[in-house]
Length: 72
Image 1: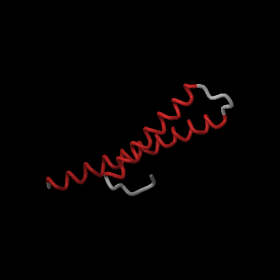
Image 2: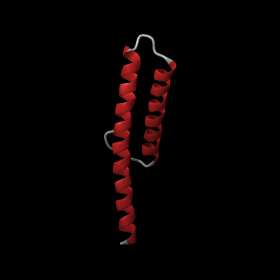
Image 3: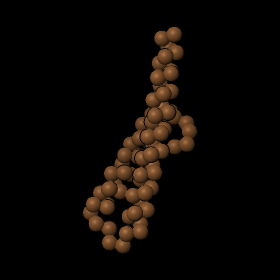
Image 4: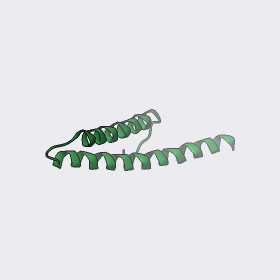
């Protein structure tokens, strides 16, 4: 019973991680589109893009460490 709960908690956190990754990927893609369509991108736009990119790839790395399979 104790071991079953651990796998259940892991599955719950894995689902949360995948959902968070999907949201961060959408934010990254949105920032990327904004940077692409902006003719004169300022420092704030570039910084927003880089932050979104780093957050997504950090979560991607964590998913690889946890051996997650799914729509990443």
